[in-house]
Length: 327
Image 1 (cartoon, rainbow, N blue to C red):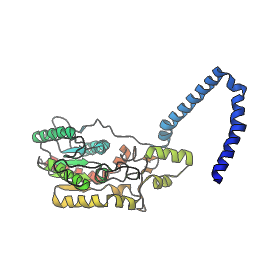
Image 2: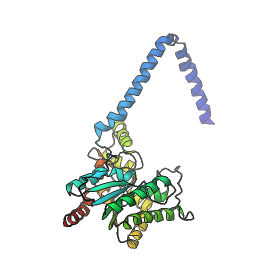
Image 3: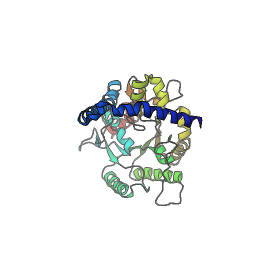
Image 4: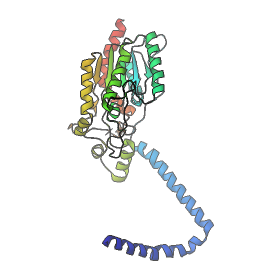
């Protein structure tokens, strides 16, 4: 009641001593002049906002997204195919990394698509076409190595934005058996995806474990935090990113099931991206370092972020290269 009374008093004073005198001012009687000033002001605000949105981020930070049109990695029609890449938009985010590895180790690969995992209710017609294409491709081109990059945690948890409390979970349905629970359905779909490659002769299926996921859009929050609040990179990383404990809690069940999948299917190998993004004290993750952003939104790695994982794939590509030369 006190606050409501105070609001009424302030509102009256604002109306009586600010709004009414301003409205009666001679300036506002000249509509042509008023519209001219208004248009100029609005245009100035829009230009300033545009400059802030584009140039402000880039002037402080370096980052870029991978070329999603890349479908071949150091490959030409005369080369054997040493590896294939499949997955969703997270596979595309690693395009430049895979292209660099292929070039550095003189091996050859192609990106085959595959939206998420097979036998799910999402985009059934599209993934059926892709499965047919993959079957046809692998029947014509024997390949020993496959890399799968999928936003596993989002599929498993059913939440596009995990840390948004208002985010509704999306139910995952396994088409051959709709009675399976969401998490059972996803894991069975993942098994089917792995088997899609193995039955076509792939000997090694590399699956990247869940990435750390920032709680906010990294470029936006980094620009706002630095420009408006002069926050340090350490402060920004703690603000934007999940802690190691939060990551472990978010992915605990999924990572346990992925470990079980390795036991069930020896051809599966897991690649853990966590170590290369952990802070020195192992307490939180890093998405900003030395004015470089490792994400181009709230879950996709930038080219610079993907390059941090180069060391994780180095030994794998050395083996692929050695086998390719021996063949």
